[in-house]
Length: 99
Image 1: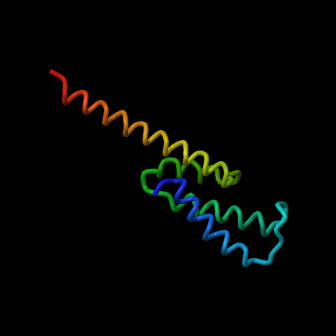
Image 2: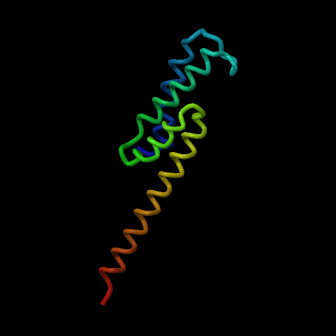
Image 3: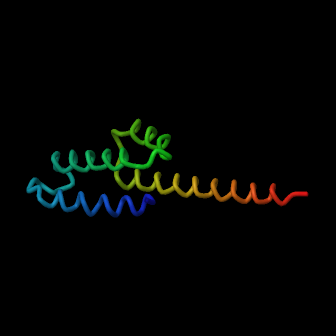
């Protein structure tokens, strides 16, 4: 599952759960901040093992971590990993065809 697919599924599920909470919804509400932080941590913890290094870095800076930041960094890492995979495939094909 890609990061986009994972986020979409996670957002649908968590959106349904948070809609049942009748706590304050203002951005400056302590309960709202706690829920947002908790959901962000859970999202980051649920990514595939290939993202362990970025997960560790994100959680290390967890006092300022937002869902937008986590999603952006995970998407960037996914793109980087896909690029490396593509480059290694091209390299191996080129080496196999070398005289």
